[in-house]
Length: 499
Image (cartoon, rainbow, N blue to C red; front, top):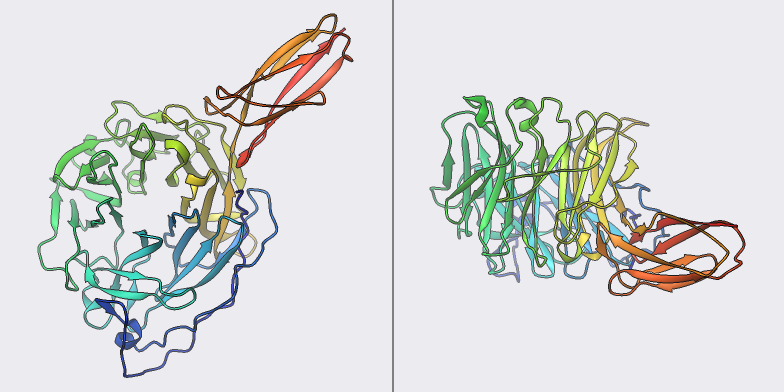
């Protein structure tokens, strides 16, 4: 089913905060945030998901405002996407992007008496997401440790759980988190200085008892951290950048196996000439296709980040991401799993304020067509992507709109393009001619695609091929051939018939 990109913003469901003294919860081990922080839960809304007219990919819809922070997206088993971000220092907003093209937005958390980390992370909690973030406030939240919250009914404030994932304070830092197939949770974060701290498994107290586990490097600093699970062994891995190191040759992007507390590998082509660019985010995600593996996207080792690199963890070489060859293309690269083991890559080019997306083949060794979208932003705070498992990609951006310089959260969808070959063919009409067209997705054959040309229509076989017969005496001229399939941009070729 094709997803529509536009999302309608619901009126805020928040009620003015008020103090009350009775706490009841039906969730085992849960904490009612309203009781702890003096906030009345928002009224549960019964609004249906609105029907939204279909719009072309690249049409940006506003779903909220932000505080110059990261958004997080999680894809549910039904193909819907949950996106969450910090509207301000006390409020998380959430949008539900539905596969049928509908959407809705509400307040997830309104945090009184303290502050929330500006980069929430969503991980799987079955059919709904689990929100993990660092928070400050009255006890037990006064330490700023990583805590978890879950949604109840749509439009209600989310419910806090009685565990934590860190002893350290995270409220001013960035972190990654993941859940493996056994249901175990992990989080990793940067501690000021040359440290990567992490914890595998939740603790039954807030904060978790000391100590957190830690990688300690000789010097320098650690940049933003992302975490993913290796589908081959269920190990937790963290990807991060090191900078201001001595010698500078140790600057770069690294991946570490948290489960074994080892296996630290430097990403090829990363870091020796620009400490500032290496402090930016490193995109990190897993593919669960038949080829599997962990993948990272990061800037090359030049001062202006001339292009992005796509790396299968463990490979001696990284691939250059096509189309990422302008100055500073690497602002907030994003990565998400696509269908059948493919990977989606998205990035923002600060030189021309454009967002680009591209998808790999099933083996993650080739790229399809690069798509570009004008997002009307003069500055980007973050980019997050998900939903690629259903064939289309949801893109969520936060930044300053060029028309009014106000911060906004925007969303659109992207597709990848079919490739139709041969791209051009010509022949004389003095005899019947058969032409075999092949439809591919980044080199992989696409079965069941519809190809039309010269009034004829056919469907591709398992090898992506379809044959057309052009009869003797067909009118000379140029005929357009088009390949179409659900959740793809059309592919095009031409047939020239000569006398």
